Image 1 (tube, rainbow, N blue to C red):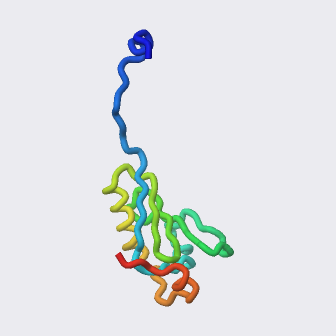
Image 2: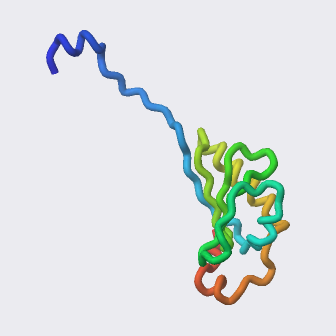
Amino acid sequence: MSDKRQKKNGPMTTKFKVVNVVATQNAGFHIDVDRVHDSEFLLYDTEDTQPNRYVAIRPPAATHQITIFHNGNMITVGNKSVAEARRNLELAKRFLKKFQNKQPSAFAMSKYPVKKA
């Protein structure tokens, strides 16, 4: 790099900042997506015809949306810190307990087993 260019633009900096934290977690139980659909906190729902149906919600006190899959997997994006992402997922998990699917279908159990943490 020429000296002229370096003087004009100044020295390069090595600063960085976290602008987006993506986090995933399994709720530990299957979720009845049809019942979540009737919730006032629903933001988005896929069509019933898709095999991997999911919904996006923003539970009370959460700062970002959480995408929920019927097998209990949850994803949140747009968080500014790991602590914020963890808090949002914990809020979602508590919120979703009332939508727990007590008897998931055999298809859901065989293809999408719940992973124990």
